[in-house]
Image (cartoon, rainbow, N blue to C red; front, side):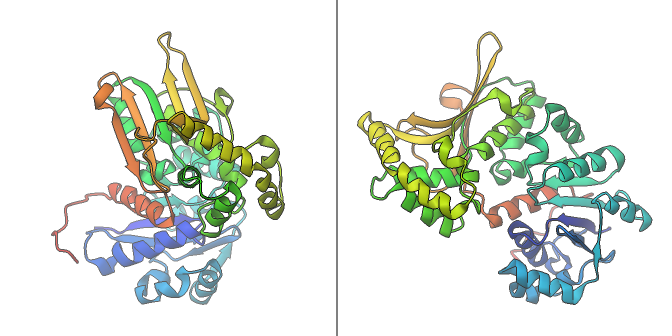
Length: 388
């Protein structure tokens, strides 16, 4: 059978390099596990792409993975030495190239970027004007544009995989799709969608260190975005809630969500990272008081995304810090773990559906992408169940 040909969009980033590392070690011809192994034929960066119809040389030398995996610079240097690099004006050129090479219908694009307008346009072009497929961890095309864009992209289920846009593919999206397809009405969702904010809450409730100190450690460990305000403003959590709600049929936009940032709006307006990190020290006492107040009530704080379907059919969407009982499903979260609690007509009371997953680092996200990619394998069969 033919290989599963893959084009990685944003391949030189952290998730892209981790994805390639896992694919090269486990999913290519070297693994001898799949009848049609993964074949990376191209990957892009912001300036252009590397392409080889037979497969990039990088995947043919698995022993070299450790040489470039550690840094973007090392990776780019390695690739420049192995492959011919082509510049492009627009991602859409790929679709023309694929057709010229006689590969139409054979390609899966893997989006590990954080791109917005250009990636939205490309996703739409792939779905509307080609027969290729997409697996994405990039939530922007599905969440920051009108609901109709989401519906257009996700309508061809077999060609558009977006499980990794929420909790790195930990069954949240797939379960919500199943509820929608089986006409199971979702009444309520409570979720902690951010491993970064979960870590901050778990550390703050201990009462041993200041907020700014914990945030500084989280940044140094790579838990936060390069600018931590991109975690603390809550927009990432709100976008995940939008994707979830749209998945089970709701027409929801960002303006419909009652959004409260983790810290005050004045801090979130600071552009310079160093100035921001210095400034948040002024929030230490307020954060300490918030957690102390919750503890005095026998509760703790979690940053929660909430959906409620009212009796009259209206929907309420909220994102922000909320007091919860320490022994509740959200209150007992530790470290950077994520959790979503879904209540439906059937699954309610003691039968609420609960999904918990690790915080989505590059390794978890890359694994989730590989998992969804494998689900698109044509003629996929079970392996021989050997351990190697």
